[in-house]
Amino acid sequence: MEQLTHVGAVSRRASLIGAFGAVAALTAAATSVPAAPGPHAQPHPSNGGMYLLGDSWAAGLHADPARALGQVAAEVLGMTAHVDAVSGTGYVNTAGHENYLQRARTASGAPRLVVVQGGSNDDHQALDEITANAEETYRVLRGRFPSARLLVLGPGPDPEPVTELQRTVDTTLAAAAHAVGMHYVSMLQRDWIPSRLADSVIDPDNHHPTVEGHAYLGTRLAASVRLLHPTLFA
Image (tube, rainbow, N blue to C red; front, side):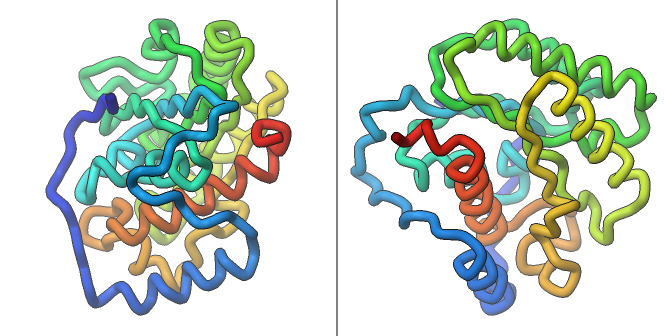
């Protein structure tokens, strides 16, 4: 069901599990999210699932594409997941494929939740073009899925440590989301990945989340959805 492109091998770095445990402990202390359902659990009957539009982080590149952050979040929320994730793409950047806006125009289905993830691949694009394409992407998705809740998840530190250019793209996307009345969740502003624990979430060799990192990020995303869209689970 998931559309994934440019997917790499599974990365399982046992030496990072201890540090990841510390990150997971921070999440547990800060948020209250029900445990993920078992492998045979059925989706919550009141929702039609999650549609996620994103880049290589959503595709699980260099990790496990079947357990990337979107699938983890959906499972925690009791939803099915349809992931449209193409490595290297962004709101403007196509990486030889289609950017977010182009893919949004052909998105289909009847999800209850729509998440747009990413933006780091646009860090060398003109800011006014990022703004225009982001706002139009959000408007198109709202038009195609009028009954869905929408949420934008900004880029993570790609690479880490975070640069001023990364922060500029993040704030540009936040402004675009707010301009069209959408919730924006910033991994950078909320410090989802503290520098001292970054290697437990992001593989320093490829700048992408590890398997353990996806579990952590997916749990954080699920917590944000519950916080910002509580009526989705009423």
